[in-house]
Structure formats: structure tokens, C-alpha cells
Image 1 (cartoon, one colour):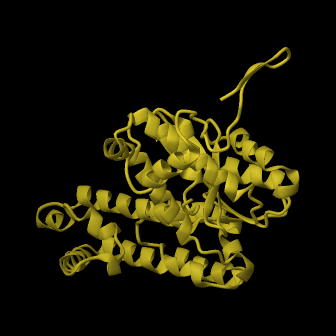
Image 2 (cartoon, one colour; image 1 turned 135 degrees about the vertical axis):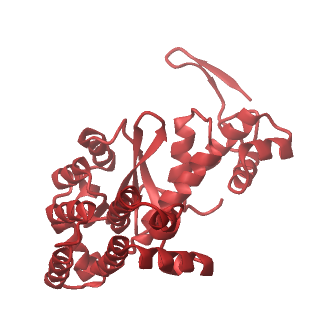
Length: 327
């Protein structure tokens, strides 16, 4: 490899196309290591290929950068916005996904403030931001304000799974309150049944369904709360915002006299954020929201596999290459 000494630039090495950024290895070898890392941990690849752990990680980074280069810049029309916790102490990063191409397109920020979200739109550019027609997010106000400022033409839809998580939390609060309220044999039906109560009925095994039925028969308040949660999920089946509002108003009226304070608090929250829920009723906004939840689960798997890593660049590359084809 030839070296050139330039008066302006200093000493420069000749660039060879077949070498990777790590000049000890060829680009072809880096691609092989990166492909293995898609299915194996760094430790397993290191042991299998008899390479240093850090070398494997560096070669995988080269592979992932090549994936992103070939994928090219994204021009999303439908985006999903979410935050993930990268370590203890409320340390967050924002993940933005292209929901039509089903891939992450941005990972960054130093928290989850509006200023952090603004950095995504700055990186995306004004012209690309104008092409966004739909933004799916949770009810976090800074995300919504940033979208309204940089992509005012985009409709904002609140993520169904985040909303249902709030409702499940309300149901769990009712369960805890009932456990404290009742005594004796009535407590035995509630104790140890949190998973059964918070799971969807169709996801339970035969034994789980029997435990659920016994629990609901034994406690009228939990029975009412459980049925109200199941009923609420019908909200996303409506195609007319007016029909959806009528359904929600009727659902909210059923709370009267039930003594379900957590549900009443949840209903007030839905009322305050109604526009972002009703927007999903429009046919042009009927995006498959299941990808968002599935994508978040994949990110959590990556974080578990990368436990102990302090390399945030590596985590960002792993997340941004989720959904990209193998090289």
C-alpha cells in the first residue's frame, strides 16, 4: 500500500477498494462477519471465527454502515416516533421509524424533549419533512409539538398500544385496590392472578381461562373493569370519527356508579387527547400499528443481547439496520 506525503493534507495512505475501514481485513471478510452477527452474538462469532471480541464488533459496524449506505436516505411519508431507555436513571433516546418501509430511520437525542425531537427534523431536512403525511406517536406532548412545528401538514395519530397500556395500568390499579379491600377467601381469588387478568382472553391457556373465570365471578368490580377494557378495544374499528366519539361517550357513561377511579382518570386523559385518537378513524390513516409494538420488542431483544455495552454508536446501528436485507 502506497503512502503519499502532501504539504497540505499530511501523510495519506492509498485507498484500496477491497479493504474495509479496518485495514487489517478485507471488505469481503467484514461482510461475512457481519452476516454471522445477524444470527449470533458477538461472543459466539468471536469464538467461532477465533477473533478478538472487539474486532468482531468493529467488523459488524462496517457491515451495518454498508447496509445503511446501500439503503440510501429515507423520504418517509408515515413515521412512528417512540423513545427507549438505554440505561437506568431515565436516560432516553428517540427512535423514528418509516412505518411503510418498516425500518428505523433515526436514532438520537439526549432525552425526550422537544429539542431532542427537533434534531430529527433538522437531520431529515425541510423538503423531506414536508412530505410526511402521518405521524404515529404516544401522547407525549413534546413529540406532538415538534411534529406540529416542523411537519404541520401531517396528521397525528396516537399509538393504540400505548393507549391500551394505560388502560391495562388502570385495570392493575383496580386489582391492587381490590386486594387491599377484601379479606379472607375473597383474597385467594385475586392473589397471583395479575398475568391472567392483564392478558387477552384468547392468549390464555385452558387453566388460565379457568382462573380468569373464577376471579371474575368472585369479584364484581374486577369483572366490570375487565369487560370495560375488552369493550374499549372496539374503538379502533370505527371508520367515522363521529361514530367513534359516540362509542367513547357511551363507554364513559358506563363508568358512573362503578367506583372505578383509575378508569375515570383514564377516560379524562382520552378526552384531552381525542383528536389524535379520532384521526385513526379516517381511511387514509389506517396504518398497521402492530409493527410499532413488534419493532419495540425487537429493540428490547437487542438491548438484552447487548447488555453491558457502552457503545451507543453500535446500538444505534443495530436499531437502524433492523428490517434491512442481508448483504
